[in-house]
Image (cartoon, helix red, strand yellow):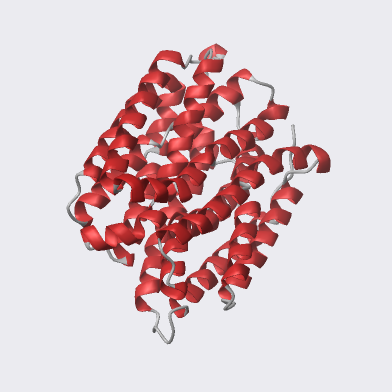
Length: 388
């Protein structure tokens, strides 16, 4: 089981890498493929929407056939997507490739959570979930400065071929080493409607919709265009800024679990963290002229905007054991789909905002995301707190 967890962690590192690497690829894709900011926003949106659409069948597959085969097959599809991206000659092929990669990554985190929920005590689920995301966020780091260095050394197509090989090897490792946990006794039946009929679960679903999207959308795409257009940054500088925000996201992912045990509340911790993230978004909305202040606000957003494993832990506390797979993937669906929709929305905002200055479209994007998060917090404030 330990080797299997390591394989799943490696797969989740790749998942985090793929959802964020477009920010660093922005300059070269613009030059080689003619990809505009709207094309890149749409491509990022396709990743998240493909990932989200897969959550329902992934939940069924986890409960019926287990995480091993589910994850190995899907990761192989992700490797095909990376290969298609390496051969892309225009934005359309790039978008299709990104959608395939999103499909390939769709089961990785939920497979880990499924194993944790079935194998370990509920009291440590939040800590294990947060640690998984913290380790996985090494992919965020890899998609920043290390990727920019690889592009400079070998070119972006060669880098994508390397990622294709790595993804295929990780898929094989999952197939060999992951072990499916024992299924629930008693043959209890259930479906998504049983979960949706639980009023206590809905505030967590709404919170999932707004807690991850801000940091994922900004780190995954808008950091690159923002620093390119406003501060004339090159790929190396964009990589450094992405690295700083990625490191902050790693630290935040590891911090939420211990803070839960210290504070003895999930709801209060989630509210506090996301209110701080909202403050960072408001600061970005005001668009200070100092790039270092913007970097500090991005780091603050990365640090506090990683509460989604804790929100999943909060929701999982209400889910019966025989619906574990469907339950955690339903929560993940609500967390991932809004990221894709937000990328489409922010792409339109960027294209339609009058360019009174280079910063105006990005200020509008940050303001929209801030209002989006604030609306979700108003709903989550009425959630029932529950710890294990």
